[in-house]
Image (cartoon, rainbow, N blue to C red; front, side, top):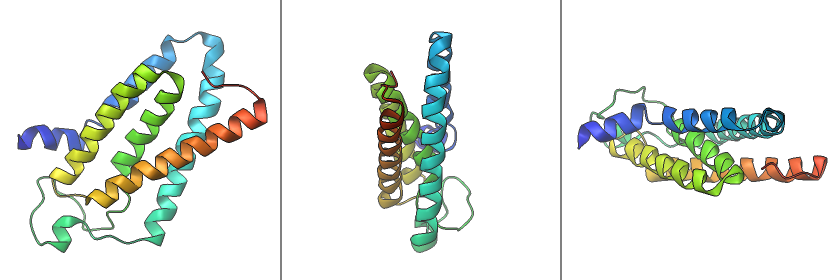
Amino acid sequence: MNLFFILAAKYLYLVPVAILGVYFLLQERGAWKRMAFFAIPAGLFALALGTLANHLYFDPRPFVALHFTPLVPHAPDNGFPSDHTLLVSAVAMIGTLWNRRLGIVLWALALLVAIGRVYVGLHHVLDVAGSVVISFVAVLLTYAAYTYLWHKEIA
């Protein structure tokens, strides 16, 4: 069981990124520009909000606060927000806006990453929940701006 969560915490974040990338490449070439003009700013905005949140709120990692050795070695820095969860939840939210079925798969993977990060002792639930909220807000605000500026749906 530990091995599953260690793998989820360390490497599973790559799978949703790869799935969304393959989905992108399988679309018509004309859709690539529209999708890229949405996904890149949405991802960067989520990263910027996550970085801001990291500077505004400090939450020591569980292994620091509770004095135990985590299953995955990590620096004892600020745990808020979880970067892995921020990435996969932004990818999941972007994928959901393009294709709801794809979004379900991506959210399931994002949930496994978040659970894995908590299970191995790297994050508190607040850290991963905060990441999901930050990604959700960033992607939806980017979507609102995109549809307002270009009067187009992304999908």
